[in-house]
Image 1 (tube, rainbow, N blue to C red):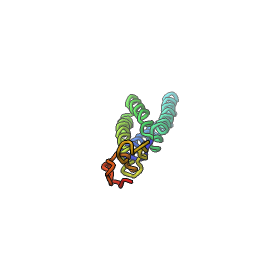
Image 2 (cartoon, rainbow, N blue to C red; image 1 turned 90 degrees about the vertical axis):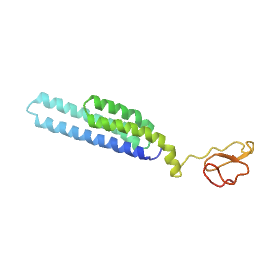
Image 3 (tube, helix red, strand yellow; image 1 turned 90 degrees about the horizontal axis):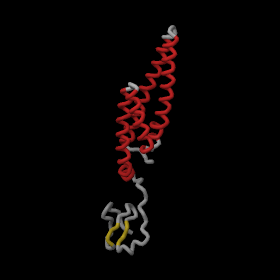
Length: 162
């Protein structure tokens, strides 16, 4: 899990737009179904499809959108791909394409996470070596890089060495 990243934000927006388009489709199915109540079998079919659409929206929200909002890009990636493929198969082309692009952006977000964390000053704590003097050098408390024993500043990040 991680924080926000530009690609993660893009993926979240793409999934949200796909969900909105799906909601519009479900509302349209319900509306047409009410209009066609004079032909009960056809209206029943449309209502059934609309109910399946509601279930679909709930699943996409739960397994893709919610996970992306929480920063769980890895956990949202596979469900987003599954929803993309199923959307494309069921002729929901625009949401399917949006979910597919979101899948790619989630991969980018996973690769961005360490860089974004470092840029915002939330990088994970540097590993503490068991015996820095045994290695004959100093370890940076900020980034964890090994430096020469005579160094005053870290060669990796420029932080003062203690």
